[in-house]
Length: 123
Image 1 (cartoon, rainbow, N blue to C red):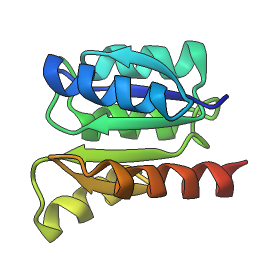
Image 2: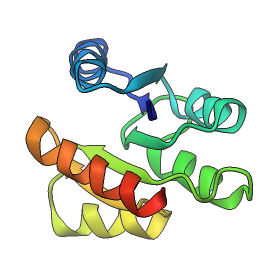
Image 3: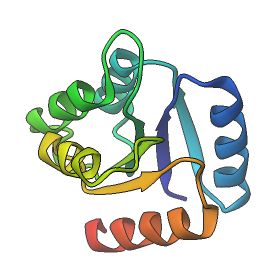
C-alpha cells in the first residue's frame, strides 16, 4: 500500500481528500502546515506528497524546495494542489520542484490518474 503525505491547512479539504485517498487504497499521513510537511516527509518518507501551496508557517513552494533539496527526500514525487490555476502558478510550482500540478477544487479522477502515473514512474 502506497503512503501519501497530504499537506493541507484547510480542515474540510484535508478531511475530504484523505477519506477519498484511503478509499482508493492509500495510507494517508496528514500535515497542517509546510514545516510539518517537511518534517513528516523526512521522518516517514512517503511514496508521494500532495502539497497545498498556500500554507501557514512555511508555504508550499518553500516546503517543496526543502523536500527536494534533501537527498533523503528528493526523489519523492510532489503534486502541487492550489486554487490558483493560472499558467504562472503552474510554472512557479514546477520551478519549486513539484513533479505535477493540480487545481482545486480537486477532481478526484484526474488527481488519481496523476498520482498513479507518478507512483508508477517512481516505483
